[in-house]
Length: 284
Image (cartoon, rainbow, N blue to C red; front, top):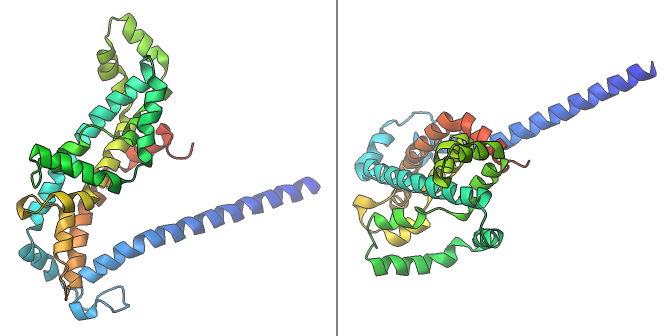
C-alpha cells in the first residue's frame, strides 16, 4: 500500500509538472504570436479601424497588398535584401567554418589567446563600430553602394566562429586522423571530411545570419540613400509619414517583409533545431 501510494504521488507530480510546462509554453507561444496576428489583422483593415480591438476585420481589405506595391518599390527592396542576405550568409558560413576549424583542430602558438581576444569583440556594442565602419566605407568610395551592405559582414563574425568551433570540437578525432593517413592536407580535411559532418551547425549559422541581415536597419539607414538599392526595412520606415501614417498599409508591408523569413524557417526548421541541440548553444 505504501509503495502504491508513493507511485501515485509520483504520477501526480509528473502530471502536474507536465501540465505546468505545457501551459507555460502555450503562454510564451501566445505572447510571440499575438503581434504577428495583430499585424496580419491590421493589414486587412481600413485606416479608421486600426484601433478596433477585434482581431478579425469586419470587411477585409485585400487591396491593401496591391496598394503597398504601388506606393513603394517593395519588390525591388525585397530582392535587394535577398541578395545582401545571400552574399553575407555565404561569406559567414565559409569564413566562420574555416576559422572555427582552425581554432578547433589546428595547433599553433597563441591559438587560445587569439580566440579569446576574438570572442571578446562580442562585448563591443554595434553602435560603437558604426562610425569607424562608415569612415572605412567612405574611404573606399562604397557609401551608397551595394558593397557597403555586403563586404563588412562577409568575412565572418565572432559568434559564428565560436559556434563552428564548438561543433568541430565535438567531432571524433578519428575522422581527421584517418584523412591525414590517406594523405589529405589540412584544407582537404576541412573541406572534404569535417565540413560535411558540420551541416547542422552550418544550418544554424546560415539561418541566424540570414535573419540578422534581413532585419538589419541601422547599417542600411547609415549607408544607403538611393531607393534602387534600399532594403525592405528602409521601405517600412519610408511608409511612415511625418504627420500622418496609414497604419494598415504599414502593417501590410511588415507582413510582406515577414513572409520570406517564415518560409525559410519552415523549410529549415528541423535542421535548425537539430543544429542548436548538437552545437551546444541550446543550453547543453
